[in-house]
Length: 357
Ligand code: NAD
Ligand code: TYD
Image (tube, rainbow, N blue to C red; front, side, top):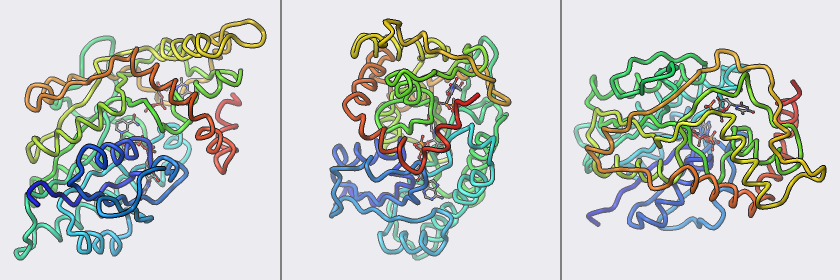
């Protein structure tokens, strides 16, 4: 089949990966998706409820650092495309325990690159139009002052163990293109939000605490800026990079939606007040905002210049922040048991300790 792809998605049970798998199985029906996920604390099979295994989808529980397993999947499934999401992704955890970040984000990426090289670059390899898409973050560029934007030419300046591990994996991916001509493409995206985001990240954490009348922890002065992108827009950008991107190129992806954290928290509170009513005390949910100790090395501002992907590949975000955040809050309200299963599960102790400060 001409348009057929056998695509290895790593980390497909996480937040962005699950949204991506959902997009592929509905919008790219001729692609076979093999989802390799270790199911760490952040991986959740409930994110893929309704996606059945069969001709177009297979789930494999496993570690991207497991060389034998990864090589076996390349052989067995005739993989021609990799979309590599699997990572340890939470900055706060990278500060308290960086080891897993080094292992998964660096060694895991290396393992996948090696398997792709072995499978695709062999003389007898008949693979058609292969593509290794490494999914990364704008955090590799470091922190901006009040003005300016990250472009694809901005030098890397990572400041947290998370962003340093991602920068390292980006360098490895790029090196495999230059050294071995492995068909690598890299995307560096801004902060995502939307359905299935693990409730340790700002927006779902604030949603859940605000709903239940708990304190809303805002780090430092709350004026740090992030550029928010609705997750589905990110997933669509990735499909465009697979279909139309060029090997050896990086593409910045962003929503042109810069917001201070305090403003994001306030929007979530106001939406909840409007949808479920004020707190029992009669106060608005924003009265729960509690300033806590700042994150160590907290990057002040991120902002993406997405001119390249828009001019070269014609991608634009479809969702404004106002539309996307309302859709997100509606999703979380309609899926409260999804959050509760996580918060009441193995994650509970860590979650409770997070805002003791
Ligand atoms: P997530 O933490 O929600 O999900 C990560 C997934 O990877 C989980 O399903 C987990 O089980 C899996 N995983 C972790 N270690 C693994 C291993 N060793 N082997 C196999 N699977 C493993 O992360 P996310 O927010 O969905 O982010 C996905 C990717 O996108 C990451 O590479 C991240 O750096 C990047 N990114 C995220 C954002 C964001 O705002 N969330 C922004 C830009 C880029
Ligand atoms: P986060 O969702 O962890 O994403 P990232 O660190 O990758 O940008 O945090 C987004 C912003 O919100 C960041 O500036 C840190 C801040 N933050 C809080 O103020 N309180 C919180 O409880 C969390 C989790 C984050």
